[in-house]
Image (cartoon, one colour):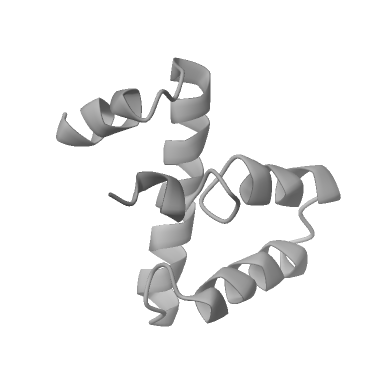
Length: 80
């Protein structure tokens, strides 16, 4: 609940918040599985490389970068 409140404080709408949470889960699972520190540039590049390896479309990768954890609305959006 605290996480949801934080997203609301950051003025993230419900569809945007759902999308953000989806990508955050994917990214954090990736970091845990491959032992990357979350938020580290190397982990973000490795996550993008994994999306390419999984043959994710350019649109999906753009979504991860722009609306998800990797872009300007990503991890830094939640920083205090």
